[in-house]
Image (tube, rainbow, N blue to C red; front, side, top):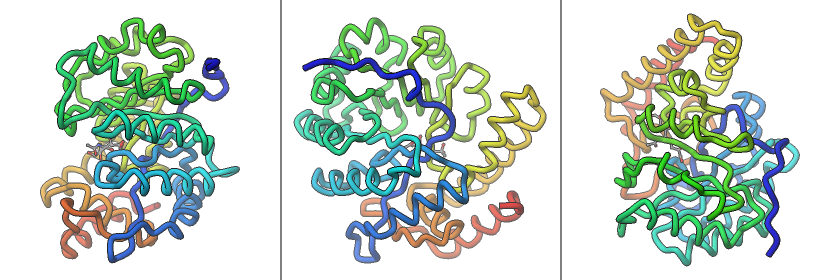
Length: 310
Ligand SMILES: CC(=O)N[C@@H]([C@@H](O)[C@H](O)[C@H](O)CO)[C@@H](O)CC(=O)C(=O)O
């Protein structure tokens, strides 16, 4: 199989929303919501890139068949509207991950990402690198991102070590979605990064620090509903207006701090999105619990008091 180097004009930058998976009240996929969801992100949130079937999308609670249907629908509805659709294909099983990688290539996704398996965890960095290589090789022409999220996977390797000579192993390697708090490791990844790679930061509450460290952009759940202010944060940072960038980051932190006191988990996060967007994306899937109504109202009020203009 021939391997295409990722084209520089497709280099990922800016804000990427990690999408929620729309469910019916009965817990089945609710595909009719995906078209309006894409329009909401592009028109109301100024977000033109999506990361689907990730943590926010509850990928690990979905079947392989459901993940394929979702990936297809996201790619279809995003056509001509979104700049990029990245499909997360990581699973506990290597075979399932490879199947999803091949499928992502078939449906012409723009890129794939893979999380570390977390039931049987890779015992060494090399074991993780081998897993990633075996998945990437099933979609050799798609840009490939390693998805680091140690708070969820418990796989706390240094990403910089994962990157050592990685293009010899994975020629399609294109960067990292770094959802960890270790900014030294992140900085070392930036320092080692190749010009065509993208290093995306995924702890939304401290994006500004990652931008200062050299992040090319951000992937996160909150960009579903704070896309506009965070785009302003990035612009302010690029203009060197740190006071304005900090003001926006602090507002986001205030919202998340408030929500955390009420137990900010995926169920609460999804309900906040439902309230703010009006999209009715349904409840989360068990074992994630739906958000208590009173909490959702209280956090939504806080959102509107912090971001009255949106
Ligand atoms: C643990 C977790 O869910 N992290 C989120 C963040 O966006 C997170 O919700 C945010 O920083 C608030 O804590 C993302 O990194 C996850 C993500 O991008 C994804 O859905 O794949």
